[in-house]
Length: 117
Image (cartoon, rainbow, N blue to C red; front, side):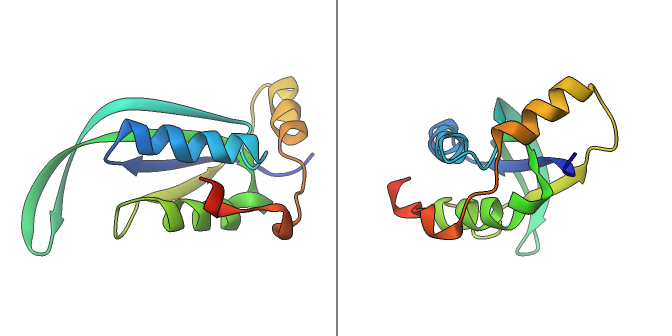
């Protein structure tokens, strides 16, 4: 079985999260995306303490797709430095992990068109 990962990403808008996630699922780069519509983030930006309301997105996919997913998010989101991280899924329900792998087959880069987002 391929190495499955869970990607987390934050964005400032539910609409942006939906638009990008729908593209990633339709292109079969991610098996599923869960949008948590409201989280409060506290962080330093340009030497200023900031507080903002964001959406958190959690996606399941294969490690081989991470670079394409990261680039699609960077190219199509409004943040200058989006939070995009992943964790390796080291265990879980085998049937679910098989579904993630089957739902995200290897896709040639030439088949992806980010402009359609």
